[in-house]
Image (cartoon, rainbow, N blue to C red; front, side, top):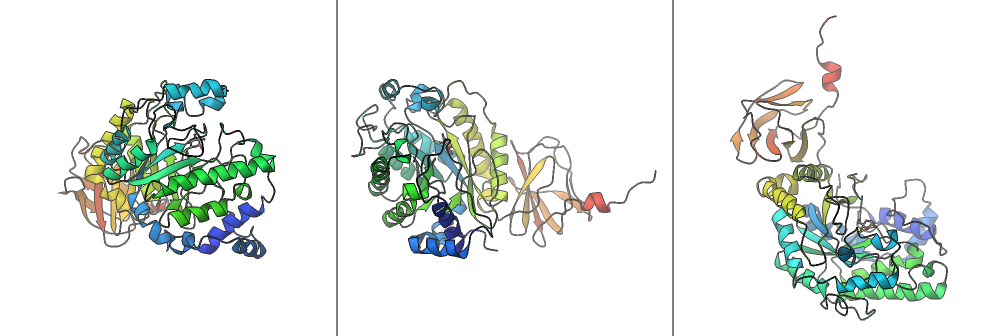
Length: 464
Ligand code: GLC
């Protein structure tokens, strides 16, 4: 099964459908969720042909598998939300949710004063956590550009920090050996045409030129960029944004880049947000998630996930062939909330011992247990026990013969017995040998699968 690619025809179906359902400019009242894949049967051949003639950048489908190889192997990335909203410290939607007048909001430029090279701390933390790439906001919905753009003075080099923060970020990520991603919000609450573009063609023309121009700068001035992560396409559709041309330009400037699906085209991967849902049909996906409940710094948000939850999420993504993009929201001075640092360091300690069970994992079918979850590499099943039960650990319905069992972190042999119902692993320590998750490597004689209801159906029962 091809797990990594999506063929040209599938991509065209999605792109064609979003273009063709949106021939005219339409104002939408709420930010739109990411473009959905059009189910089989809802797209006629005629539509496909129409889209073919619009012209897909050949690079996007032709070398997708090769472009995305590093990304699939990376599995785990860091998202960074950083901007004027970090000074407001009330979540990155504060400007709209609190209806803050433009002039009042612009005053946050005075408080957005990061220490020099603050992104080095982001990159170091990402590396320590086992994250292989970073995606940082270059412009969020507030419209403030973190780089030295020629297209607006509303940018970090001319106001606020007085420095090109994108440059600092790119340098920092590269010096830690991390792949570099740019988040870019199409929606813009600051630009005078940011809403008007939906109903006024002259405004749309200006705004689309501005948008393509900003993206062109980002992909021209900072060397090789690995990911372009579009966000919220309100209020235009793919036709309005000229998204096909946008992607064409992107691939001309950065032939190796990968792009997400939030400019209303399918792009290279889907972006489930705050939940983990695998894509069907082998399409690539990346689940993005906050560490508390906010992307941008929110000083009062103390609803932190613990390191165990993060590791379990990462395992779930890896099990189902996806990536996990986990967010930090630094403060206006560039410091990272201490809780985020602590959690990511704990995750990193676990990853330093157990990381290969994530990075090198194939899709894994087994999923049933109330105290463990699974990943797999070839014929070896990794049972990740998050609630250590004590001296024995058991798995139901394993449909392969176990040849050996070891504690993954220290390679210590584990005693086991197997019958058709149960894999029984025993003489284990009462206390969990690893923290916050203990991984058992179960080497099997064939690809391990699990029959979830074999025990329920087949296990001999008692009389009444
Ligand atoms: C949503 C939010 C935004 C955040 C993004 C991350 O689209 O509007 O604030 O940046 O999700 O995926």
